[in-house]
Image 1 (cartoon, rainbow, N blue to C red):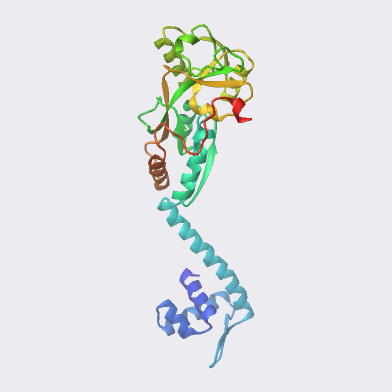
Image 2: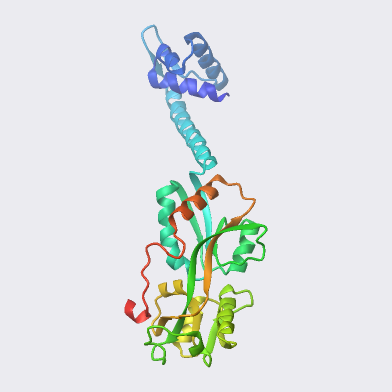
Length: 310
């Protein structure tokens, strides 16, 4: 059974007229009539009742028309979807975020995708540290990462910077520095630090670099596997922390955020596999870099203390 015969049948069924159906199909009437006869022979059922005055569907023809209509509609929808995906206008994008970047950047990224990429669905993977994102990109488990360079595999992964975030101080409410407008790194010389678990943390490296530039080594008193744990340890009075400024987006009672005058910044970047030729991916990168200004984040307020959020 040929697809063109199904389309011929649908045209005759919708017009109930071989001449009009032939015009719609841009073909002569005799070949159309012959094709319908062949289809009926293949099915072993008459699809049309033909008289000199009218053509109408038989009960078998009506049933077959219902099924053919659904089939052709599904086929046409599939063709349209395939073309949109090939053009980068539809599909699923798997996006990973490091730490609290999802809190600050996900709303803006989702809006940009909705406004500029049409029928694209986002699959979000949150709280993935940079080394884990690198592995996920190379394994094909995610398409785009929002992470913090430098990378271990910068020859296999391309990046584009979207923000340079300053490190800010997190202290328990009631700490001697909690009410200061800003602080300097030297004032943290004798503090106990809460840092991230693991040696691959880009933020930990930025904290160490800031301390070394101020002439001391941070005293690592406690560590947490994620930002929520780090902030909770600070709230419990077990130390202070230096974190990227996007962490202010996390509401947690009992901590205060303060600017640090001479701390280093940490970059936030889009990352994708260098050999990924997906049109959808490259339309996303183009849309995001065209609308995410370096050093800023869309649609997010920036409170100075968690108390002001309540």
